[in-house]
Image (tube, rainbow, N blue to C red; front, side, top):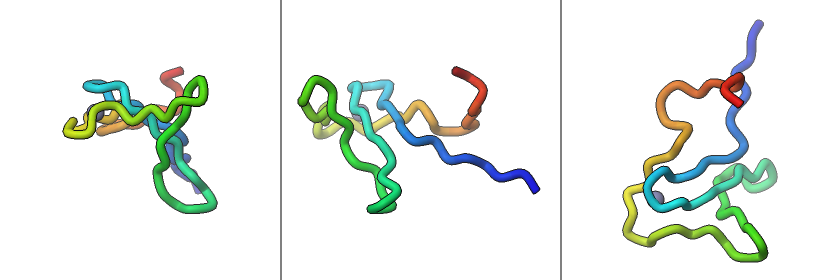
Length: 59
Ligand SMILES: [Zn+2]
């Protein structure tokens, strides 16, 4: 049985928003970089880099 491993982070290709997956909360939370939450732009229709085919071997 092969299990699909869900991605643990995602980045918006439009505004640079960054999320990380919280196992504990079972939801996406805003990632921080240098102590600054990476909110991106509030009205952006986020285009996540993990949309479509997620490839765990792409990195
Ligand atoms: Zn965005």
